[in-house]
Amino acid sequence: MQNALWQRGTWWPALAIFLALATITFYLILIASNWIYLGLGDTFYFFTQPRMWQRFWLTVWTSTVSTCFSLIIGIPAGYALSRFSFSCRNVFASVIDLPIVVSPAVIGAFLFGITTRFPFDLISEHYNIYIGRNVYGVLLVQFTVTCAFCARLMKAAFDSIPPKFESVSRSLGASNFRTFFKVVLPMAKNGIMASMIVVWARAAAEWEGLMLFVGASEGKTDIMPFAIYLDWNGGMMGWVVSMTIVCILMAVTAMTAMRLIGGKSHVW
Amino acid sequence: MSGNPPTMAGTRSATGDRTIFKSFFYSFTGFMFLFSAYLFLSNLDQLVVTEAAIKTREITSWGEDREVMNMFAGGFWRDAYFWKSLNLTLMVPVITTLIASLVGIPTAYALSRYRIPGKAAIEVLFSSVMVIPASSVGLCLIVMFNYGPFWNLQQQLGFRFAHSIFPGMILASFVLSFALGLSAWKAAFDGVNPRFEHVARSLGSSRWRAFRTVTLPISKSGLVAGVILAWTRAMAEFGAVLFFCGTFRELPPARFSDLEKVLHIDQADFLSVAIWAQIEYGNVEYGFALAFILVIIGGLSVYAMHRIGAKGYIW
View 1 (tube, each protein chain N blue to C red):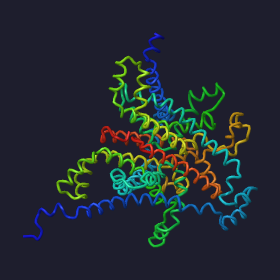
View 2: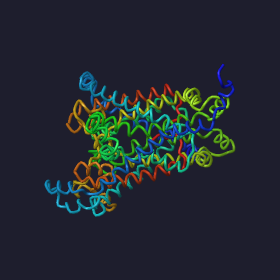
View 3: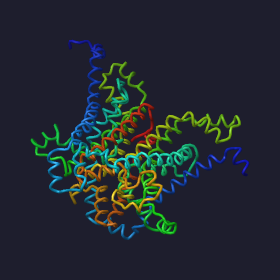
View 4: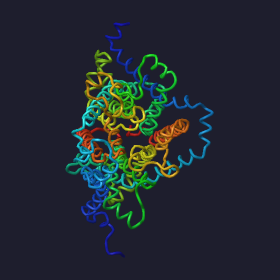
């Protein structure tokens, strides 16, 4: 037995499968511990409270709006990053990727600087829209964190389509824009929808950027990930754990939907 | 009858059309570049202490080190806390990444090659860990380790995971960086045709030898990209560390073990947590100086990632 294990190298798949099972168990316990802690009765109690669902809908609509903005910027930017080559491309791509590589908490701090300067101070003067400790601040943070993320996912979606189809379409006389809208976008549709869901889930999970830039006002800017921190500081453990369960369910639902739509997505 | 013959429609100024097309798409990329660059550069003046800040500190009389706080960038290089925090931030993600790679590369190989039941559910599990809010991850860790059987186990063994640097902070940064690295490693192994390995085994290699000499060299660049990815994610960790470990600056020296003192990581925080704590405290220049250091480290690592040409990653 010992001999076979070492000579035929069987220890390697055994180790690999053991580690896989161990990590899966760890993550399952990590997620399931909330339910075990809270129990079924309390879960029902907190899930029927209006405070919970108010926060839930706030999370849903803010992340939907910021996902829309991210998509408007991210789809064309992802296409450009996927198809065109230009000089110093790595440098440009690195700067674009910085907001998702640097800790989001730091991004929140950096947003202080940008909102007191040129475009934003004019907006707040002329249109009476203050971007800061209100829901606009939440949207700005979510947009900043997901925009580059969206472009990166879109780049992956467009990368999976061979450029041959575009050349064929153009050689048959279609204009570049017609090719993009009639050939590239329909082909990338699944990838784009899958990425859209991931971006939405990422926006709904944003908390760290809000810590410094927005803060939470009860009922106004307390989207669910932030409300967890808020109630944690308030010592309301039942609320915290039940909201964590909702966040986990949102994430799992989004990822399941992504898999169902995107099939075998290139992203993961 | 119209002026132009119909055949002209396809040939109208193809190059001019291409230029408009390209500049349309470049404008969005350019917007993102400018937004990102402006986001970081517009904060450079936060490093300089203003008169208003000095006056505010006179009124509120924070701390005895007010002279140092009024220096450029909060005089961060004169603070032992900064050097200890930098030490910690460079050390902990490296250990985390090492553990994550040792555990994660075999796991990714198993998930990529072998028939494990419920593989779709497993992939949903690992990918949803990445979009669970960091506050939830931190809370899950708290609930898992501070209650129930794990808590009793820690009581019996006489140590704690929560609020400690060595098991705690590594564990908190491990959860997300492992999940992210796993996605890249799995993508790297998925990209390798299993037939190569079968050929090697039919020629008499053992399973381990087939993996080491065939699959590993082919998927090397993808694996390295995953390692960098796991490292940057561990570096950018904030939420889980804040929830699970808290801050260490104000804790008494007796709380830290001799090993932590020898390594100069006692009474120090993760850099992102330190930034948050300093800015909340009112030491804004100091916090932004630390933030720029984090940005430089992150920029270098993402540039390395682009140079390697990492594929199958999302962060």
